[in-house]
Image 1 (cartoon, rainbow, N blue to C red):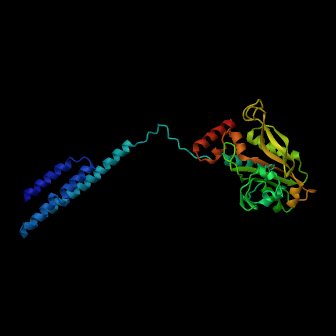
Image 2 (cartoon, rainbow, N blue to C red; image 1 turned 90 degrees about the vertical axis):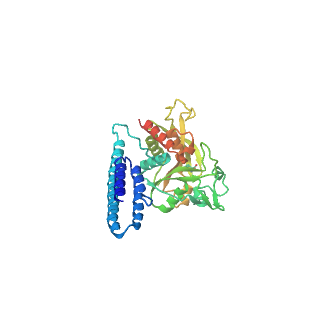
Image 3 (cartoon, helix red, strand yellow; image 1 turned 45 degrees about the horizontal axis):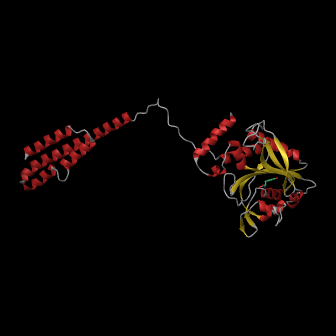
Length: 351
Ligand code: DAH
């Protein structure tokens, strides 16, 4: 029995000496110390021995078991350390290699343009105001001098929500009315309102059932068309460059009189003629005019004392022009590759 134990000790020691991996060590542990291993077998065999023999051999077997357990444990720690060191060695960072570029998201280009416009107007003392997208017919049309049945309504193919009274606003102009009603016919107004608008258009490269407008309204004493021109000039120069000129062409809107179409000189070809300006040298960017006396009156401002100007920009159109974007739908998809190319275009414009 004693010899058997000694032989087993030798055999195990030999095996443990040659162990190289944790897996091998684990296999040895299971093989020798496991339920079906030789040590358990020896322990079972003890039942056959006399009490005195049990005392002697029991101790020998237990000693062997404890000795092997301890040896395996310390070998395990040693091997774990070795594996860790090896891993650290292999994973050493080569700081001379070029770093992987971390891609950062960028703001939506339309949002960026609106923020730029807001900044310019805020610096001129304007308020940036908000209005509801679900609007009443009264504000969207009637108080803007477009009564029921007026043909001008057809041009703005509107989404009605409830009967003929509640709709998705087809323009941001109702916010003019709301702002004047708040002013109560007493306080001067300087505001812009960027916001979403809706029309029953089929989506294509230049149309969308939902688009952004930037409305503007100034009401004060002695406001004239030249105030409007000066103001538009500031924003145009900020957005498209200081050499850009503005011109007004007569137009017609129900809520302004006179009404104008705002053109800017083509920043792309410097008026030599190109596709952007359709070889005319000019690009239309907004509708505007002097607030119609009826509109002032309906909103509580006495046209004998007050006058004002208003304008409405199409935000997508401005961004498309500025960043040379051919398809309006890119503003509403979320592909980062698109926004990244816009950033590059902006760098180019700023150079
Ligand atoms: N609301 C007009 C539209 O959607 C744009 C517009 C034109 C707004 C003239 C104005 C304005 O404030 O004075 O077509």
